[in-house]
Amino acid sequence: MAIPQRFSLVTLGVADVEVAMAFYRRLGWREAPSSVVGEVAFFATPGGVLALWETAELAKDAALPTMHANAPSFRAVALAINLGSRDEVDDAVGDWVLAGGSISRAAAETEWGGYSGYVADPDGNLWELAHNPSWPLDERGLPVLHGA
Image 1 (tube, rainbow, N blue to C red):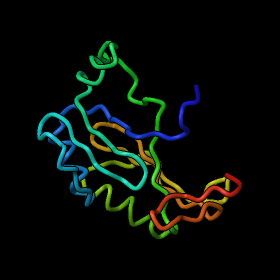
Image 2 (cartoon, rainbow, N blue to C red; image 1 turned 90 degrees about the vertical axis):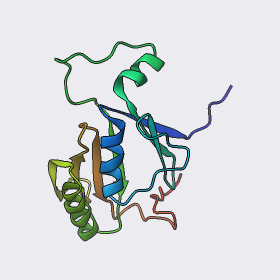
Image 3 (cartoon, helix red, strand yellow; image 1 turned 90 degrees about the horizontal axis):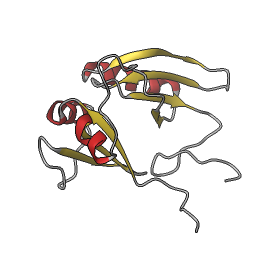
Image 4 (tube, rainbow, N blue to C red; image 1 turned 60 degrees about the horizontal axis):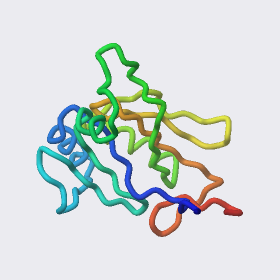
């Protein structure tokens, strides 16, 4: 059996769905009508769907224990948004902070020839905001990988 090479949905565990929804709304994102205020939020993107769900409910659904108070804040996962220029990265980082997020690593030139920074939402979910001149963006804003 072959599993399709794609993802349909990314679910972020959050402490409070309504607070998290408000943050992503301040970024200018609009949740899908299938969202249930206070329970789960869905944001359609040109790639997959982003979902926000209470961490305890996500852990329960996956049959895993909820993270304890001493758990590391870094979850070893980062989502990324590729942008068309360095200026767009800087603008996005500024908007992220204005919406209530934080900067993990300021945007800077990278060893791979691009420009990127890391930001976190109020629940600590990590996002990279990047410009990669080797990956042009298609009409949906998604990177085009040469040879793929």
